[in-house]
Image (tube, rainbow, N blue to C red):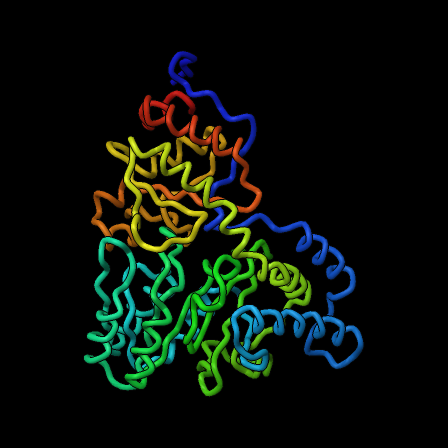
Length: 386
């Protein structure tokens, strides 16, 4: 179909990236640290000679920074390929699990796998707010044996809703159980109190403007996970495989910026609020009323499909999403919004997540494009733009 100049929305002047919850653009400090490390820290960190020791030093620096950032000890930090692997490590040996359908797919799929193997799993009810109720955790643990693990993320990856981790930890520990917290979206945005009381914590570098392919699992003494892989003695034998000094250097550079993260997070709150106010006539906010991260909004639009809106906006240079990037490629609407508010609301959902480099001008351009697409209809725009 040919383009129709009367109905085609004008494209923004340049690409506008509003999908920071999926991944973040590497910070210049990270890029430079990795550039230098590529020339100097390419050795095997397990080698005892000087080349290996230089790479090992970068790894240990990153380990210390992870520990400081999450509030645990460096000796109890192991590196992984990312938070998905860290979540699998933390939960794989759990005798029983309590969790919910709003967790990251790496937690939900692991719980489903353990359930299929016959281990007890309690699925926590999800209220419309998207904030798990502590009483529901208490009820679930009454049905599970001592030693069960509760998996509760610090902040949701789709809605930004902040979970009551501290209060849940008190209930969990009173029952003789353990708490695993996926802090991937919270690290660098919230203070460490956001996952206070966690027995294990997972994080990923690429959510804090670091490199992809590296993350970490931190745990309290006595809470070391059972290895998923077998091999060498790297990472105390808990996660065998050769570590990458270059990735570790990039992770370290990103972690050095974490203390200033909560301030940067609050700085974009006004832009996020402007998005929600400007689109109020077209949409409803998923998670509204619950405490949320300041940079992200999840909107369900009236009479519009979320995936079509995302596709039409993409052709206009506006990068947003209709759900978790880790669930991309599926035809089902967001399981998070489905659990909160039903499949119809989920089918029309779009996540817009901002970052520290997002500008007021970019928001203006994005809002203009969104309004034009909604006015004309996403399907019409897609036909005209193809």
